Amino acid sequence: MKQLKFLLKTIFASLTLLLVSCTEETYTFGDIIAPSNIQITAEIVGADANNPFGDGTGVVNFNASASNAITYKYVFNGVESIAPAGTKTFNFSTTGTHKYTVTVVAIGTAGASSSSSVEVEVLAIYAPPADLLTMLTSDSSRTWRVKAEASGHFGVGPADSLTPIWWGADPNQKAGLGGYDDRMVFNVDGTFTYITNGDIYGKVDPLAADFGGDQGLTANSDGEFVNYPAVDFTDGWALSAPGGQETLTFSDKGYHGFYVGGDHSYVILSRSANEMSLRTVGADGLGWFAILVAVN
Image (cartoon, rainbow, N blue to C red):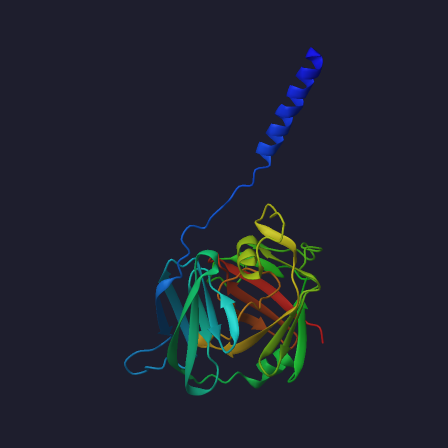
């Protein structure tokens, strides 16, 4: 009988421990307060007393801030783009002086949001060379890929460097990581399609911020996500030449095969009929390079 009582006490104690261990924990956000006091500044590049609408490049740098905001989203012409730091550069390419309305959505705890809009009047006088448009789009539609077989097809260096002086990829060095099978389709009407073939490749922080978290992946030793799950997406593109430098700018998330975030403006460092070398400044402030080659 004593053994039976001891056994029952042991079972009861185990059940009590199990019930305590399974007690559901409750987490709260605290007060959910929508962001307020949204402030938006717009710097029209080259604007001064004599040129109030800018230098003709059509480039405008925006900065947004708000109380109780965690992140920001810019909306222009129906295209949304996340800007965690509140900064965004737009390249307005319609020739002439035109007014544009840009909306900023400030996002706070639990997704609470507020928005505000600003209107800018900008001059764009740049007309891309015919051979550049033909190279990029074949005057209709053209598909590009990373030139994986070339040395330096990916690389990194200072933001103002003309070459990837810190590191350049060897031929096919990044095979199987999600970048080489991607395709970039430029259409002459200014639209763009990025074909992922199921996954993409890039730096951890901008991928997580712009494409939807870590997707259950673990970063590699270089702070990259490889084979990051992603579906095809569409975007817009425009050409400009600030300071005389041909530049390709995407409206949202378009990129050159290795995702680094940033303002999605890509300086065309060199080009031929079927190939171009690009540099962008990533979210980390570094210069990230790629070589693209035409597929068709």
